[in-house]
Image 1 (spheres, helix red, strand yellow):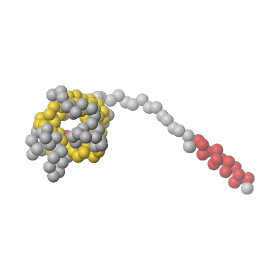
Image 2 (tube, one colour):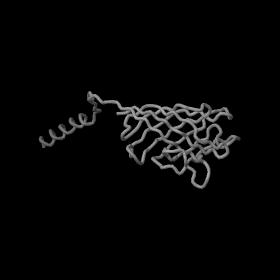
Image 3 (cartoon, one colour):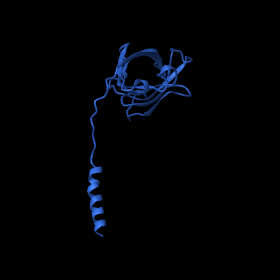
Length: 182
């Protein structure tokens, strides 16, 4: 009986030790930061039988489909050229929300993960989260992360419209991306 009591006391004394928060700080070995530049085209298609961008929420106000507060989900093709028949190298999945009260200037806040499905960066992606105003001809968007070859990426994307149909909302956007990663 005495051995059982000692064993129970021993077990109860051990439980708090294993249940406590654990933390360890380790100095990582030095890493060499790399820079990668990418050039491709994004096809954001709202029209037709198989759109790559769809509205998933719209405010209960009068106005167009892209009025303030409209939320879109995207699965846009990334290609090597601006033509819709150009070779597909990946896709951008995410969403954007119309964020401008000014009805004459479309501005979106965009989050998307740009994943590559072929070439040297097959299986890698980078993430973009930034404000995207439509008025300047060339816009700069922030890169906030990545995975695979682009792990811990930061950087920027300079973008410009290669094609824009104001009636349908279809857009082809040229991307020049500079990534800093390890």
